[in-house]
Every structure is written in structure tokens, then in C-alpha cells.
Image (cartoon, rainbow, N blue to C red; front, side, top):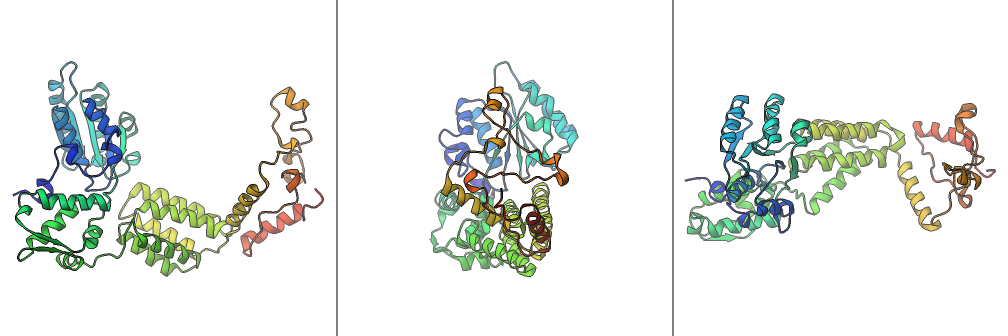
Length: 423
């Protein structure tokens, strides 16, 4: 007997759960499928969200030859053999055979190169599936010939729909009665992965002594021999832990920051979410006290997007420790907030004439750009000049804070500008 996940694999969009942004009413893929013609595309998303299933549904709906290759086991020779078969089955004015390549990111450059001609000439319609960012893993010429569609982890509601669908429709599960008391652990372990959810359900059913099959957090944890992570990517805990993470960095405690980072990593948090928060923290909490913090946080973001899990935890940890141990300043953060508040209070004040651009004679005649002093023409590349609107010419928004880096900047600004009252 096939595993539950295979028995429940849908054969039509009516039974397909999740990805409403792609296959819901009037969504892009739904419209193409209903029209009977699709273009080559790549499905990008985490495991267990329906990439392979969607490809098979498309093939069934379009009633066209369907070939499957796995990048793990197939070489250039296998690709060429499939393309030759596809050529023989391609007839005038009929949809091209579909070539589905699972884990296309594992194909080498030469393997991907071998697909280019067939995709461009319409010998096959390529559907690729990948868990990695195709911008980094798929060669640019092939990527330019394909649309990229992002699949999202299944939501709690999607997973619950799948759970009840399995219990009510599967030929074997229908023989049992179920008592569903709690689903938090099952959903947490699944992590948005339909296959994981069905595997857990199957394990609980097989290990149950008699009906009713009871589903609760304790039983699920016991069957899986793990402790359910107290972490919910979409719930309150998600925000509590990221808050603790950022406050630990702000409070210069690298040990606590690493602990909360580990909680997020182990809980299946989106690495891009963690990386974005590090970039924000580098600007908001470290700022000008150590400008290199932003560079390193941004580099960590790029690195984790390129290498993914599990190695992505390392650049995230490096940036976390660096930010936590750096001197802190929020002067830029306070400065822009003060500026925004000032704009709200004062409205659209006119730009002083000497700061305006003057690309035409009329503008010059009206005084645009007149009297502007070009800083580089003066000693030290500086000359005292008014850059704020007339009503705000003595206003200060940025104040240096007490750290070695900003103290120097503050002293320089004081030397150049004084209190600005004589502008």
C-alpha cells in the first residue's frame, strides 16, 4: 500500500490545498491551465507545499505527454534522451510535451545549458521545482526563458483542511474513528509541509492501539520522540522571540542573542526574516557608533540567501555576535524620526532658490540656483551655507552620541557649523 501522502496526492485543482495566489480563482496559473496553454516556469518553495503535485495536475489537465527527471539522478545524457522523445511527440499546433525537473537547482551548468534550445524552440514546456533561490541556482539564460512562481508554506488553515480531508476521504483512514483534542504540536512539527503532516498522522494512526484514534499534543510528541518546539512562526511567540532577540543585541548580550537566534533556527523561522531584522538592528541600534555593523549585517543577509540552511546559521550567528558586542547608538534613528515629525508639523516648505536646479534660461532668470556655493571650491571642501528652508535654517535634527566614532563627527560638525544662528 502506498504511503498516505501518495494516496492523497490530488489529481485536480479542486482538491489542491494552498497556493491560492497561484491557483485560486482568477490567479495566474489557474488562468493559464484553464486556457489549456502554459509557458515554461519554475516553482520555488520549501518542501511539501505542492510543487510536484501541481506539475502533475497541469499535465493531467492539459492531456499532454509528461516527462519527469530528477536532478539528483539524471545527467546530460538523460536530458538529451528525453528531449529527443519530446521532439517526436510534438505535433503542429498542439501543446508541447511537459518536462518536469525536480530539484532543478542541483543541475550543473552544462545540464541546464542542454535545456536552453528545447525551451526556446518550444520542443518542451519546462516546469522546474526548487527549494533554493533560482536567482542563484539557475543559469541566467534559462531563467530568462521561464517565469518564476513562489509557493508558500501551507497555513494553519490549509493544514487543518488537509487533516480533515485525509480523515474523511482516505480509504484506510475512513475505517477508523478519530478524537481530535489538540493540533498545536502536529501543526508545529509540520512547519507548513503537507507531507510532514500526513506522515505524522499516519504514524499516530499506526501506533494507536484501538479506536478512537486520539490526537493531542502529548501523543504526537510521544510518537515522534521529540519535544514540540514552543515556537509558532505566525503567532504571538514569533513576535516575542524576535523581540527578545533584538533587545538582547541592543543590550549587548551576545549569549542571550545567540540563544534566541537558536530558538528561531530550531523552530523553522524564515532565515530572510532573521537577516532583515539584523540589518534593521545594525542601523537602529548600532548606527554610527560602528558603521561597519550595517555592512556586515547586509553581507550576512546576502550570504544566507545564497547558501540557505543549515549553513546559513553561521553567517547569521557571526552577524549576531558582532552586533551584540558593538558599541551602540540610535542617533540616526532618532534623527530621522525627528525630521519626519518636523515635516508633519511644518508641511511642504519651499526649497530655497539657491538650492534649486536651473536647467533652463527661464529658471535662471527667476533666480534658481543663483548664489549657490559649490563646496569643493572652498578650503576643506566646506563653506557655510543655508541648506534648510528659511523657517528652519537654525534647526538641528542630528545630535552626536557618546561614543568614540560619533564624538569625532560631533566635534567636526560643531567646528564647521557652530550653533547655526548666524546663517
